[in-house]
Image (cartoon, rainbow, N blue to C red; front, side, top):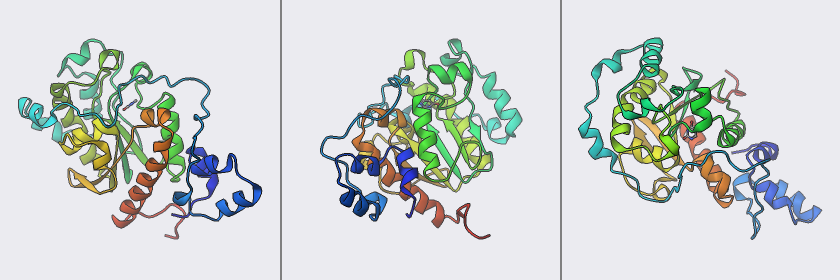
Length: 275
Ligand code: URA
């Protein structure tokens, strides 16, 4: 993918790392390389964020999760949700009491973005900031996510829809329980049916395992195209995890390149392309 390096800098990716400790000649040579070929230095520096990440979820992306498939059998999907329009669906989520997470939430976090977007990004569950503001990915991880989107000429208010598997904050940011996933999933299924995205990007282990009904590790799920509700799915690391694991940002960039290729193959039209 030919993208100017400035967008990769926004994403905090390789050219920045390459430039540190490089001579001018090397840098010039580096400019001519394809972004995905740029190599991080042996000792990557920490990301340039003002403060520590405010998301303290336990996103250990390579650890096993609960058994989502088993839980799904416990909570049959209410078919009535699958006929709701956007307004009725968001009202139903706002009033939801289908699991214990309703007891401690401040706000439900329904989703945000372009409701007819080609791209749908799916995270895990709201954190503290999201619970307070009622919008997904508004903390430091959200800033990184916005930069990742920007590097693909995408933005949450234009051509992307962002939602979570779980619509209410698990207390203390604990991992959602299987029955909570099962009770919340019909909302996400309906959102996917209404948006009709050409591509889903699963952000992190939890979202990937929940959507794909698997306990496979994120590293084994990355790099290939899966499917959820008939939509191609690409798995990548959670932005909160990437805030702590700089080397995996390069892998996340490779995931986004695969996502873009998959979107193009599904008929996606780049915004700068002649119509
Ligand atoms: N992490 C998520 O997975 N979703 C959010 O909305 C915020 C943080």
